Image (cartoon, rainbow, N blue to C red):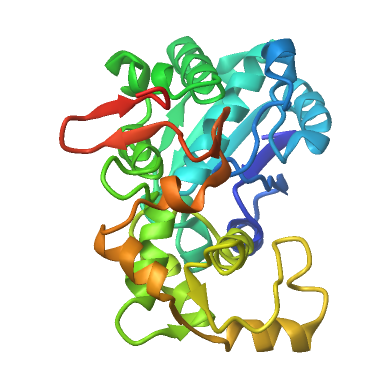
Length: 320
């Protein structure tokens, strides 16, 4: 087929497709689309001026060029991994396809149950995942899901109609994982903070082991750059949760200095007394430590924030 465009969620998936194309003698343009949609702002910070055109994920700089390619390609194929961030990328791309007036008959989704970057080059695409032809219900559902996730509160996301989630096999799991990453009703910990504290709690461990715990977690919410940001954040402030960290690197600079990065990842970190009290539930993380991060379009900030009560499956407003 002429003028085929293949979009992936990361470089590893693009590597598989390039190797597979060489074997299968298929010609297509392959574009890895990077973007962090979890714990990163997806809207402009001025909520009073927010509208549909102001949705601003980290992949925005390349989106205009992608939309032009969407329009000109005879076929656009999305190769989507099962992790929540990749699912959100799929939803975002489909919601943008509506804005670009892309013909849905030109779009197809290949939804892998394991990451595309882990496939052997000799394994055919169809053996990994069948093609799912995009239709109008997929586009309208994607628009509803994205609007709910980018809203100023998580309420619309919780209230999404089951019919909006139905076109996407892994979206129910994704929604549950994202709700779990809101501060919990009991201790104020999101899923990511909880995994860090759980990994470090017993005898302490290296930052590398914390990163490994995230990589091996079935949900796989965040990648290494965001893990670095989280670990650094937990080790700073008036009441640090962990100590023993060598350096204070962040997502933007941890790869700049190789020696500093190695020293950072080899740090043997442990919970502070305060951290142990948070982990045991004796103290509430948000109330005592405060919070300043994003959940979709919701800014979680200060010593009160939206929370998720898993038992009652209910959101708790900051005013409560």
